[in-house]
Length: 469
Ligand SMILES: Nc1ncnc2c1ncn2[C@@H]1O[C@H](COP(=O)(O)OP(=O)(O)OP(=O)(O)O)[C@@H](O)[C@H]1O
Ligand SMILES: [Mg+2]
Picture 1: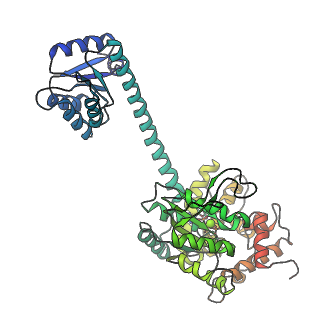
Picture 2: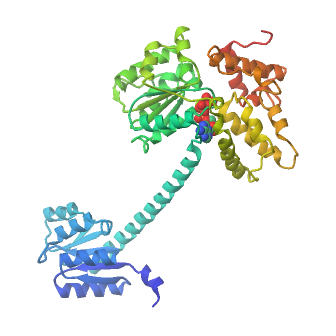
Picture 3: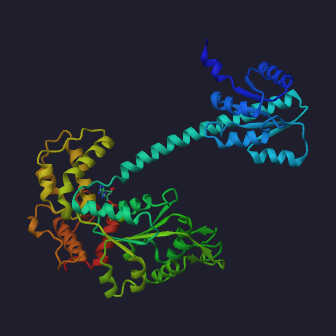
């Protein structure tokens, strides 16, 4: 027997306690290349449907034993038969009966006596629709698997050091709650990664994680970005626009670099965090939002408060569950693992072997990593690019890395006395000196620091770094 073409012919289950009706339907459907099977009662139909999984069921309403409606309800409540479309065949033509059929889960009905043309048209349409839905569902499932893979690859939080295990366990504890989290850590330590991990560990994971980079918000647009605006709210507001809070409704709002937020915007943010409601700019309607907030900063907010640059009341709103991300220096045990992880990922991206210069791991172990994991990731990428063809050795790579060939003792280490800002300032100054204050270009300070030139200039302004100081 040739199973291929036969399996392509749709299978219809005919349920009717009147053998003559069954015969007639079998003939009509058979002539149109359908395969058919039959059942003479509701009970028999349930069994046949579960065994044969037909593409469609034609179901009589009035039968001895369980009637058509009950049969349909049971079909719809079983995993195996739930998705099979059911068309009722009924002699009852009043609206009440038809609606009952739909309530029981049918997709359509035909009133007896019916025209063959109409029967075939409806059967054909519903089978085609069902196949579309199935194809769509399979595609969805494939996409979900791929998305999970990509997510897992990019969200993989590598690390087995005690500091990392503690961080992971805290993420697992706070993730499923709705509590506000304040993530603090040096640049490149993985704050954004942690924010995503918290979101993914929550019931909101299927809802959006919306990021706001508070450092990149133009002062005059902060409000409109966060809360949206109505059409005509200000010059240039040509269209109504939803703000980040609204976009994150049901999900998580990630306020990155919160320490950079202008003071006036801080006041407005505070209000939304307290009330969980907002108005769009130029709007009068109050909108309720259900948003979980995660904020991150590489600044010492306490010091910012003392300087009058951050509102204490906002700080206490945000600092419900503080998470301190350890610097790479505080978890050197993880360095070999991280190198292996990035080497394999980046070599795949570059299409090159994951071969690092000898002594790379050894030198990495004592390097101070001021740029933390991002710096390590960049250095591995550089090594893999240069490694090909060039007999570069690891010393050269580490010598070209930001801290040049300075002795490690000169590198700003995190001590109780040095704030993050002091370290950053010292490091940027050193880099500027090493590049003779050249900011742009391949040999410039920005490149060596792994920053955009404009970002570096911004940092310099913030830290009050000027030439000849
Ligand atoms: N534990 C980790 N395992 C693997 N990769 C990590 C880990 N932590 C961070 N990364 C990677 O390091 C890079 C920097 O991480 P991320 O952007 O989250 O840092 P950040 O703290 O937000 O930095 P910044 O302060 O500069 O914004 C990213 O590519 C991230 O995927
Ligand atoms: Mg970040």
